Image (cartoon, rainbow, N blue to C red; front, side, top):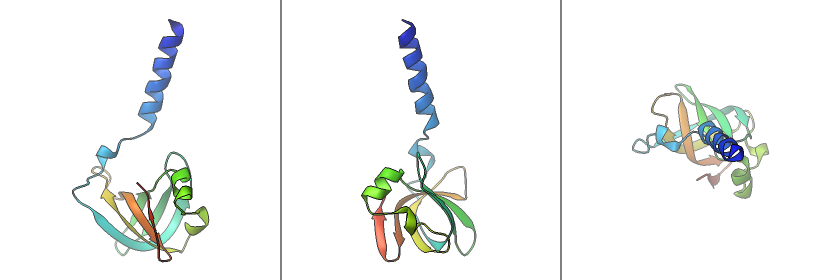
Length: 112
């Protein structure tokens, strides 16, 4: 019985640690172009800080394993690289975008 309770707590903790995609507005797609200011090839999702003409966005990417499998190497996400992303803005964080695809150096990578 104790192990069932512990397993339930463990699964609940893992579920709450990963956010859902419902916080992003798929009805308002955006295309952003700019310069990468910072990047992270980290779990659960990689990211870039993309400086555009009006502001700097936190762009949420895919998990590192998916990015690597689809040809988006960490060496492509370097500071100063030009990037274009297509994705959906966060409903509550006006500076955050969930990327569906990213283009760097004329190479487009589908992230979802």
